[in-house]
Amino acid sequence: MSSVARFWRKIPQRYNLVGTKCTTCGRYFFPPRSLCPDCRRAGKIQEYRFPGSGKVVTYTVIRTASEQFEQMTPYVLAIVQFDEGPRLTAQLVCRSDEVRIGMRVRPVFRRISADGESGVIHYGTKFVPDGQ
Amino acid sequence: MRDVAVIGIGCTPFGEKWGSSFRDLFVQAGTLALEDAGISGEEIGAMYVGNMSAGRFIEQEHIGALIADYSGLATGHIASTRVEAACASGGLSFRQAFIAVASGIEDIVVAAGVEKMTDVGAGASVDALAGAADREWEGFVGATFPGLYAMIATDYMNRYPLTREQLAQVAVKNHYNGARNPIAQFSQEITIETVLSSSLVADPLRLFDCSPITDGAAAVVLAPLEQAREYTDTPVRVLASAQASDTIALHDRRDISTLDATVAAGRRAFSMAGLSPRDIDLVEVHDCFTIAEICAIEDLGFCRKGEAGKLTWEGVTALDGDLPVNTSGGLKACGHPVGATGIKQVCEIVSQLRGEAGKRQVDGARVGMTHNVGGTGATVAVHVLGV
Image 1 (cartoon, rainbow over the protein chains, first blue to last red):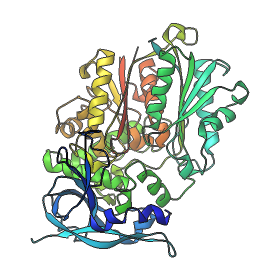
Image 2 (image 1 turned 45 degrees about the vertical axis):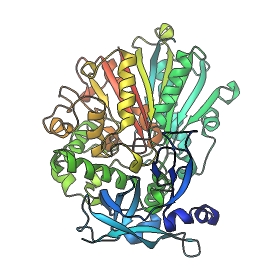
Image 3 (image 1 turned 90 degrees about the vertical axis):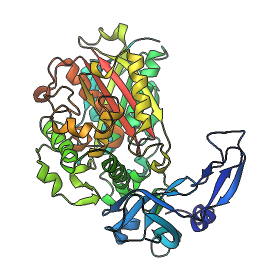
Image 4 (image 1 turned 180 degrees about the vertical axis):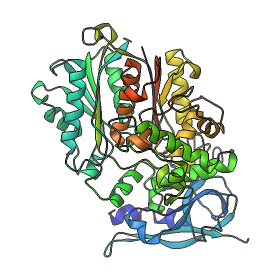
């Protein structure tokens, strides 16, 4: 069970894909980083909102999940690479036999999980096949 | 830096130990190790204990003091420290003990590892283990630990010629070895069909591609090499100790199918020992999933990328092969009490180098390696031991 604050402070990133960019070297970060691993203290970090279009790098179909996700199985989990370069782990909203490496995807706003019946409902970003 | 030797080893049977508590397990392993080293306990200057998640599994923190206390060492007020790096906690515990002795700060040091996992249900343990990866950006969206390794497998099989049968052979081989190890969780041999007909956990990984949930503890005693013969006729020298880290999340890695931390720790270990892969007689690698053993064999430099499946299929890594891998049964068949695994690997190599490994003895083994991974490769510990 996570606190409300722990989820609330990540809302810009989870709902709207707000990441960061180092204006010194031009590298993009999602999940966001406040320190550029390449430029370190010479780096200048700015917020950057990712449009979220990208492609599937690798994937699996989760059949056995932790308690929070048990009711959703089977679901497709993938590593998605944004067109700007960064990669993130996310669920795909598609059939398990539909997903393939290199498939183009776009983001959608979805319910991710809930902390029990009376706890916080966690929303965030999943991805759907784009223009196949 | 002083030369360091292992002078005693002890390991509990691994498995679902409903009747044994966390404390029972580490006291059993510690007692076995001290008896093996022929010491009473007063000689011990410090202890390190690898433990991933006692807070989640038994709601107990402050493990260093707890272990010293229940090992009967509280009155001696020895330095006792918990070491945590997820599934690599044991390997790092061994490395900390090695550093303490090598530096000259301590003489007799115990390195232990313990995990009591079955006091919570399967769902809770899956969730606790997911903490080894990135909770905010992997676990939050529903990534399980098998799911992350499954994504490594998908990437690997898309790029290299690894067949589903070759992958299954890793589990078949490790069960064969486990059936010859008295402490192993699983004592049954299995077939390719057993693996391929087991239920899917995270495609393409099936139940028999995965290491189990396990209770267990292991401990070893280290001493300066120059003092080792006072305690044992069969000291085993620590030839190298190396550790490396990488990004916590799989998605941030340079290459999904290569554990760069394994590559780095392996190179450092070979360099420190002055050895190359062909000098290694046997190796215990971190096969939390079958695909992990395939990657480990390659990333440690025993063959080129993409070749480990073929080598496994041809029997090169079998007990009677040129490079026996996971003679203990590995995490797959011996079991994987996460904090204890890295120490159990050392126990297995020491048994082999002493010639005490019974039905799974590798003839003429003189140099062995251990490879312990935390998370999906964010921490790796590699050790080389020799006689």
